[in-house]
Length: 214
Image (cartoon, rainbow, N blue to C red; front, side):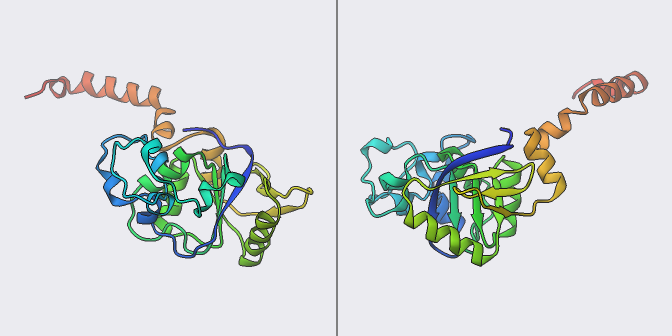
């Protein structure tokens, strides 16, 4: 997966509490057997005025002009600012896929649903928990200043505001290590590929009948 080290991006405010995974990526888009292509349907029922189905050309849809991601000032946003309990509901991994494939690299909120929070780290998306007072401050600044950007420094675990003020955040050491190096679960396993090959070679040498299939 893509490494996360230092990221600077426009912030889009999702000013709603308890945003669930069905709102993030509606259930009809879970029919896909691929792991890609979910970005155009992120927040589909809020983002468009018509009903969406898999395979539709986004250019043929009717965008909702009042929805935050359709507003010109947030075009190209790559940091999502949210309210408490973001990512609640069902445990679909498609939710962080859709957020990531839209172009977001980080989500900042006062709290996250546990499964969504864990799935973010497994897919290269950084969820950051901040106190509600800090979240309120950021919402106020985003609304006040078009093109508002934040810099997220994972190595030093700080968010840098436009004037240079920093907001520290916590991240578990192992998750930080994986994001900094771009390791998902498969990537971590493949680091041991030489040991795995050696084990398999020894196993087949001592138990050659395991090489045969029925």
